[in-house]
Image (cartoon, rainbow, N blue to C red):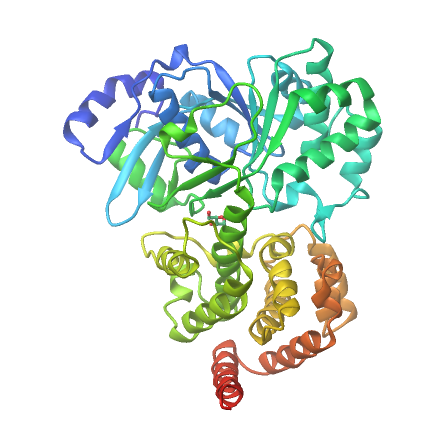
Length: 500
Ligand code: CS2
């Protein structure tokens, strides 16, 4: 089978357009596209989200917003897409299946192979915007703040020759850009991080202050840092997707991506200099980005992690399968309504109850093979952003937090079971192994490893007593029996407290 690439695409696509209504492609001259964006983290999420919006923007004639991707670890994605001229297929998996060929990525640099090429690319005046999808662990956060003692950060503080972190690459590039007083540069966080723009700004300015006061002052006026709320559930690519794409296109795509029909991009209106007209292709610019972030992290991502921990303990592989169990569905609904809704302010044009209904429907999309392990990966980094602040806020409002005590207890047991089975994927794995070897009931230690000690709940006696009690109950039972008993007792308590 011929490979997907520019030449083979030109021969094929007129055939597709005429005969396949579920296929689309933006009609722009790709050779005229100029790079305007450097994106860190060319994973499936980026290629099924931002890269689609930019492809549509190019289709509207804005040809100086092409993407130069940067892979910070592996050459795999570059090696897969380079023979395809960096074209790839994006598939929407919903009631109907739709295919798009995406051409917005012009090149992919592999940072460890040539750090200077990445720095030079960002320093180039044609680049107006840097975006990031480097996952939670890429920000080196502990208890929600930058861990200045992490070896990568320590290394970047001492030398920017071969940066180890996103902060190091950006600082080195800004120093270079400031030497010729280049055009303004915007940096936009596209990860599930609260106030991600400020997190990046903090790390970059610490390094600029250390390495170049001149560049630090230049950056104050010429570099802006913004946050965004990005949303589309995009599963890892499997053989089924590849087979579907290749048989449909009649061309071989080495790494197609897929996603659900829903997509949303809300961008903080704080981009300096030239700004891509993303509002013309479905994105929303707002000054209230924090409310959108809190809504998405506090309902969608928090719920995703609760479902996936309980689903794993209930031996379900997929998120939608986990929710086929009425007990888990009921538990997650109660947790979101009783512990997250009362403490999560949403944007004026949104209604929290409706958002929860929509999110739960999206999670039950059987066409989307999203595994619980994909959500559970890096859970020590994710639950800091998704659960901890909400638990503190609920305790501060004297809301009954037993549901979240149960969730924390279940998460500890998830880590234990994943370690026992050898399938824990987490940057803190070694610390979890050591804690588990030294203590058969490592509740407190696991929470400290996950950065909980910076949060009020981890020292709240009543909350932690509930966690320990429920941990022991779940450990000597199975998750469904434990949920059933918990919910019946919880309901009883509610009835007792609701009677005058
Ligand atoms: C998921 C997110 O894997 C995970 O952690 O919760 O990737 C989620 O699918 C996206 O944030 C949805 O927008």
